[in-house]
Amino acid sequence: MTTDKANWNTGNLLLFGVNHKTAPVELREQIAIQAERLSEATRSLAQTPGVREAMILSTCNRVELVVYPEGAPPDLMGFFNQFFAIDHSALRPHVYEYREQDAVRHLFRVASSLDSMVVGEPQILGQVKQAYAVAKSVGGAKSGLDKLLQNAFNVAKRVRNETQIGSSSVSIASIAVDLAEKIFGSLEGKKVFLIGAGKMSELAARHLVERGARSIFVANRTLERAVRLATEFGGNVVPFDDLYTSVDQADIVITSTGSLEHIFRPEHGARFIHLRRNRPMFFIDIAVPRDVDPEMNRVEGIFLYDIDDLQSVAAANQTDRAKEALAAEAIITAEVERYLKQLSILDAVPIIRNLQQAAETMRQSELRKAEAGRLRDLSDDQWTAVDALTRAMMNKFLHPTLQAIKAAAAEGDVAKLESYRATFDPNRAAAYIKSHPLSAGLSSVIESASPSDRPVEGTAPEQDS
Image (cartoon, rainbow, N blue to C red):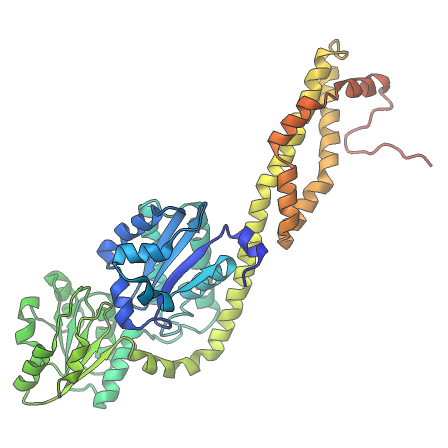
């Protein structure tokens, strides 16, 4: 349950989404946002009624909306429904929603790769940074998200530096290669096709070469990227248009493209197996949306694994990382508390400013009244002394209250801070001045005091014994 403390400190931060733990790939691929549409989607979210700031994190394992609301709570389920044309009833059972400090904690965990399918994989931090950069570029990220994301990046860096959570190179790509190796026993002499030349394919190629694979073929819609990847790893380029006449040579196909439609369908699989004289083929589909129609699994001789199938393989790696994950979780807890305290102190600044402004408004008002009245004949030096006297008195009077405000902020005492906020409103101070003329009292006090009786700045008047 969310506390009032968090509600006040984090400005009603809201995180809404689905991930590999809550939704199957069949659903995630319906709401996956391709890189070329991320700006459009983020801008659309930022323009949703009730949204002040917005960012969207979309990866193969999650789609999350990070929002600072304004006014009435935004209809984020409605955003999904409109942007993706997906029915509420299909999505709602799989959605999670975090608010305030729970949202902060979740985002810190995501950036630190504690919420990934493969705990410790390094790609997610880059994906969060990219989502933030897009939000900045379309005006969706302002002071709230700026502060939140910079803290998230620092937390992820601390987790990476202070634990061994990312000590070994583990990623979805490496898990895919692990699976291929388990299927064949050895990758020596196996022909591998990489379809797609993005970061995931590059990681897969690196792991394949390390495991002994030498016959690597790369196909990508952008030929230049395929050439670069093939050259780096000593592979061969296959023009994307020649894919269907070449893939049957592959023992292993690892596909990760940004296609919105299936690249391979059952009829393709049947043809490949026929050309291979019934020798089996293994497809590892790590794309979301999926590149391979799941019906391909029904073709005899075709063995298909999608990204959700990799979860069982990834789970085997979790045991080794459990101890490091506990250490990382402790860092997250400490950093969430530090962030909330930081926000509390920042939120106290306007209260302190309002108090000082209200007091100074009253002081200046009283001096102007006194100057126009019985103290109008004072010299410049005398007025300088009066100004210093009243300023010193005001500062000493305010000091205990200012300290109390700072202490309430550090402790996250919402009730006290809201009380101070309401009390020290400059508008209320101005209204009070209008209805409470005090200058006569000030004049009489100053006129009746001899120079030796007036308090010196930094001292207190003597008390009766």
